[in-house]
Length: 487
Ligand code: AMP
Ligand code: MG
Image (tube, rainbow, N blue to C red; front, side):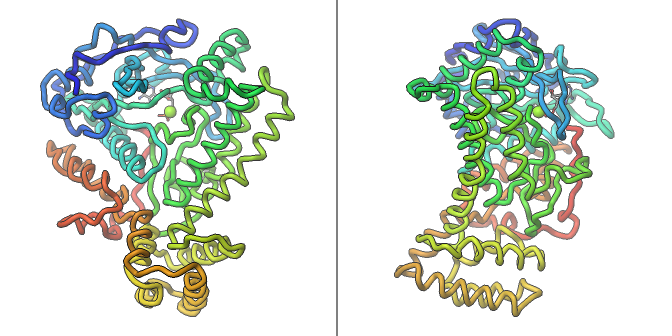
């Protein structure tokens, strides 16, 4: 276990130089206070969780103090936003403080979001408000606990610094951890600004540090792109299987590592709705829940375009062609497991599709349905769940097929089935209304609800005593909360 001053830095991205990022010091927040910290994220840095309670912790992660070996940098990138190219983006309100390596030899980027203005702030103030920082923190740690690849979050520091959005709010910072903060948009930036040397340097950097196994392949860059395609297909399959809606899948928000990245107006589905749009500025529904699948491919094509200096167009197209079949295989595998199935049959895809159509039709709670399905034997479970469906005859027909399918699946005890299903079907997810309750309390100075919710979400598959209120459908007021993009 390390103390805060014992972190070991090795700032590999900063060493790429000024073409890639700009040195900027964090602009401190007033009266910093620890809102919440993640012990699991602390462990990634070998930090003793007790250090979160020391005053220097809040000072470090609110911009008042800095390690001598840190090299805070604002990264430059660009990207396609809502389908159109934005030539100049970059860290407008976040800074890469440095890269820390842990005892296991893993590197973690320390990225402080809400750290003040940078050369890439454009019209923005460089700040993040408390509510969006809490949402990013909770989402990162909740997704990770669900087994969905994501950037991580070490802590949220609140403050008294006023920040103007639709109304006056308070500034906060979230410390984000990821093995890399390089986005698709980094490659696009050097491609569209026609800087082939820097682009090659960036590609070498990513290949050497993040895809070293691709070096062994005959065409290392192509192998790396294929791997990125595969990771994205798998990540998006998990989003779809668990009902996660990202909300702003612009290419500047897509990680080169295939991890969920840059949380804005995201949401987990309450009622199943394939057409759900969580971002209320997304008028066309470009990033609606079901569109995430084709958009994943669109984003990979945008990256492929930026990689044309290194890889032939035919090879890129072939690699892109892997995306949909891989996505479908991962998705179906997960959905089979959510249904408690251990074998694969041709018709399983239809079984899933029919169920989702029935759920859509009746607005059935997506998370609780699967959890309840695993509580009891298939016959008892479907008999109980039937009441949630408007189309009873339709559900009965589905239930008959399901029971027959389970019977063909194999012999196992009810306990085995329950244990297996509960291990993949969470009881607790980050429902928007739960986040909203915790945020409202934190905005009036009580952070205990954020901490409790975070605790519950770190063990989403385990029933926790006294936490029933976190496993309920939302109340009416909490059903369609509008989450603003102005975070
Ligand atoms: P986002 O929608 O958070 O992914 O941000 C898109 C771009 O806008 C990124 O380049 C951000 O750094 C920048 N940005 C977002 N909010 C702010 C802000 N309050 N101040 C400065 N830049 C911002
Ligand atoms: Mg972003």
